[in-house]
Image (tube, rainbow, N blue to C red; front, side, top):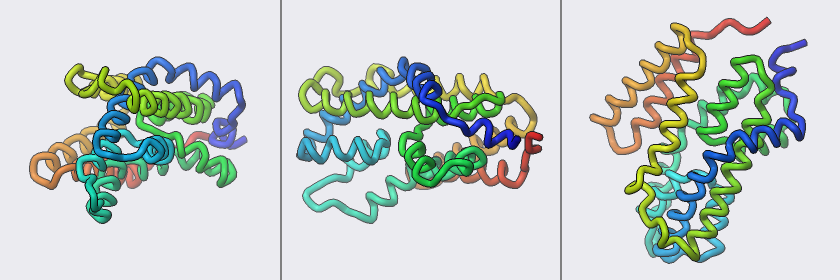
Length: 236
């Protein structure tokens, strides 16, 4: 049987396991949601618009960036470009998951990817490379993060003054440290090491010399392109 197809099975128990795995991190996500709810309310957005944005966009950094250029007349093109630049990594996240997602129907495929974020993607890829069925982590873990992001957004509308600036208390470092731990605990081979070095070096050079937020796109594309050209051996 195809290894990818076997790993692409998703049972309710798998989703529940993934939900519990990402639950501790989700509490920190709720703090960011709280700060976003407060910031969005201060910009004059209606409660319905704020909740709907968090529910459908589900992208904390780009939502904060959108607030920075929000006004009585929203500059649509800069808003689209900024959001795309920050979230361009999702193109490569989706591509990296395709060997498993292609075994699902289109509705299931896109329903799962709706909840994809850096944290549950990293944990899922680590599980896949260990030969585990990790779609439960991708879906269930994403559902946990999304749920607490929504709870945090709602709380921010009413109690947001409790955490006006999550960066001042280091909450912005939580996800970065989590992803670093996932990376260090992941595959350790020459191919993976070189891909990370190329992506990191490209992102740093773009951060120094190119426009704001372009380092996200440059780092993701350089690492992803190298990974696509330098194919790994498929599991038998």
